[in-house]
Length: 236
Image (cartoon, rainbow, N blue to C red):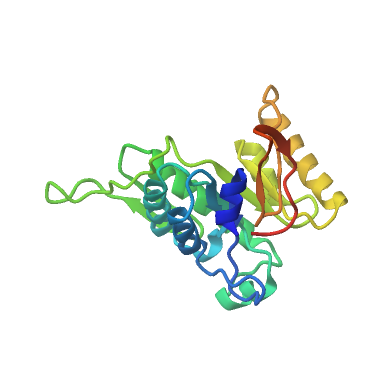
């Protein structure tokens, strides 16, 4: 399907992550992204998104950075807090009280710090303790950074009405990704991201919202001309 999307001129596609959803068996979306990169030429691809509570941020930072190099700069980096109770149960994460959202914020903060900080650091968070060590033995050191500077475009997926993770997107200027259940949900997602962005960045211009956390968006070519086409609401 993604190969066809590339041939039709779509500009991006996102692949979700779930561990207990039989209709979406994608426990490692980066594996599917890597396969799709080999069969496409132009379309941007990304996990939509990595469920950050289930990944060690240092390990994921290195994986995403390497995948960005493999992609030749076509990678988008989507993140999410996880919304399936069955996934929470598998990983023993208390999603009912919002621990998954707190873990997502902390993990993303660590990942961005690993990519951006030129100096060693010791990050002692609530959920993870990550150290960026200084050079050891004259040659061993953290060295993997994304190809795109300062990092691939970041998308944040949200599910619940008035999603807290989409507030994060608004705060940081990341791409909001809405699971398009109905117009009211999408409207609340746009409003919460826009309002938080206005609070933190009052002069910033609004950005588009991607409909469907595992969806596609792009341009549709007709007779050699390109017309902007709304993002379909079905998943890739």
